[in-house]
Image 1 (cartoon, rainbow, N blue to C red):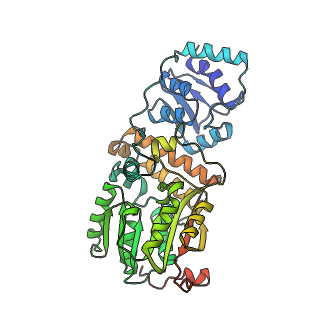
Image 2: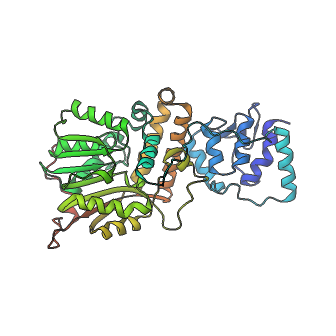
Image 3: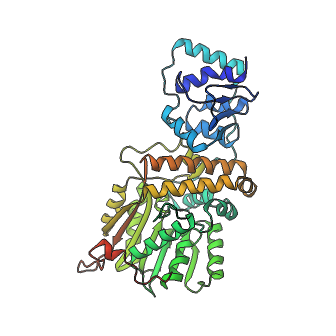
Length: 432
């Protein structure tokens, strides 16, 4: 009996008797309906053993990251089918009767997959010491995700080096154009004018700071916990001729004490704050702003309801964003208002992030060999899996992305914010 034939009862137990999946074994055998677009290939017994010990998304992720299994062909198409067939967080979703259990045991013995759990891939994050979201642990979590090589990120993110949702005014625009359009959208919402002092929380590789210093004539303090990002961004400002306007620091947002600032941008950073720390985050940024100063909080959100369990089976927590917490939009707004802010405008960019992520997946796949060389095969697989899965999450409305504009009113309750969105978004100072 071939490997593929032996795999048949295992696959049926996981996704049901009728499955539109072609399974390929390490001996070259195949089963299931032929599929020229995508297929699942088991490269060795270890991949099955990983699934045996962790029949959930973590087991699948470990097998994929280590190269024990592959999704050959169109990863996005394959993941869409797998999503329809099962719940990866809970493992197999069909009832397993006694006869099926016997078949599973026979298949496992025939394939030789009974044994101790394989060691996790080296890329898996180890749980940080200390309490969740204390400063040292946050720094370690950020380093795990961002300090994997600027050259690797350039291949994935493209010319703009921007790791957040783009703004696609026209679907046919390039990724680079969409990213700079997002920077300009944020700048206009913040009402930036020459001479203003701006704090960019989670500045990344400095794209927003560069854009507003060059085009709006503002002075920027950009902070990040990633040393590699800070080194890149600092050199970038000098090379681009705005070194006198932009200061890049390796600094926790809780340690910024040199306010006031006229405006604060937080683009793709609040996901690292944590639910329990949202009031601290909002209060500290409020204190750093001058009266009538504006905050633009651009962050991913999830649907309301009980949060997912992060520690045991989450691929994202183990491999991508250790200690990351995505919250519904309501608690974020509640924290901002509780700190004293007035929320003036909220805009969803959900479809824009799905487009952005698909562009990143395309960049990674187009530059696969170079990406592996600049990081590792496991790291490249992690980013491919996480970006493809995230794209599907935004498309299906499991994930959202929102820009929340908040203002610190003065002692008389005056916001200084235009009364209409049309006036708010009118660019008066940009010099493209």
